[in-house]
Length: 471
Image (cartoon, rainbow, N blue to C red; front, side, top):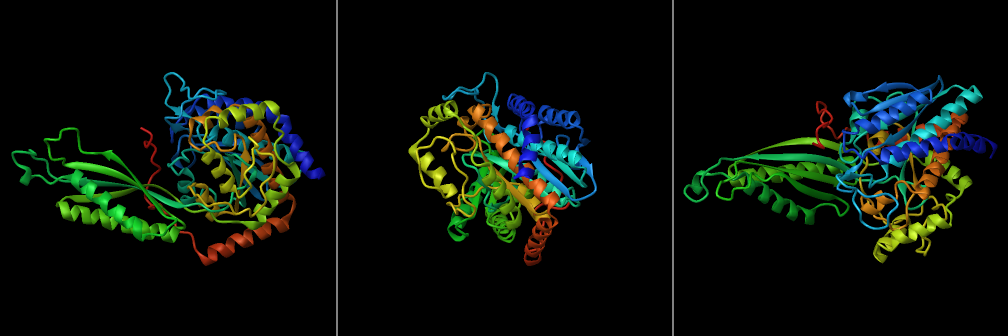
């Protein structure tokens, strides 16, 4: 207990500064790869706290790494700070009230994610210096998690090759270990080229790229009946060929997001979608080209690290929310449906209660309903033993990617949850640094998983990060 309390004191010593830091990032929501001001804030905090800083990691201007310590194991703590479009919202208000002139908002809590991760890294840096022990802690500032998949590019290019363990977290309604399941994804653009003509006077001379896209969408819709039940395929038009109905559209582009339970299944399903695109081009006498924009792998489990992180959460207990925190959470919950609230409990495998905020630690292996998304932490988990926590920062039932999430990003409850999970992450880093057997078991488990299923990057080898995808 003494070791845990020592690292927790280092977290508490910096809590006020990092709470203010998180709020500053909330005030400057920036989209994928455009996080210029947010990245500058992270770089400034790293330098202010004595880290050795490297900017522009892997050719991404808004990625950075700060390192402290020497020798010993290398512990990476991962942060994010990108926002989402269309989720602008005033803070601390339980009604939909977008901020004037803004479109983006921190509707996934990444202002808290980055600040909490850097708070944990700073505490570990201070602990290493105080104890005089060998070991290095690194904070990786990772942009564009929301579809840009920066970490996938970083893994492909060897950024984590000398890291021993990676630790991270994400805001959530409950305190828990992130169950190590997610969907592998590829984001693919299909561009069709045809031939323009007068749609009335000479329709027989035209070859419609828009027809090809629509036929592709129909074909993929029929594919949904014949793919694994946990796979997903989504699409959006990037270019519908123009706004003139009397012109046969000569070009059209559709973006597909293909998801599957693991990498082999993803690559198979993406190939099937590609063949449907080729069929649509054949039917319309157009041509099609495809381009992978980004991709993410599914998460790999690491039970030794999950057990260590869960033990830290159990020593901490739930965050110290108070009556005012619960009162505002109730106001937020009044904007939600009963289905929102019940679904949140089921996803985490916990009984439905009337508590507006988390008041317990979810048991390890609670086995909630698997409603899976995707994260580029998945690729890091294939590169090094990785563990993630869920930190309770918002009212139970709040949908992800919602104005309600944005509204809660600067609340006292969010701050308390962020500090709480920073203590757990820092405590787990200390456990790894002090216990060679824990590190060995984590590495052995990871090696065995890779032996059974070797990692294949879902990205083409020559693909550069899509730095303009938010434009």
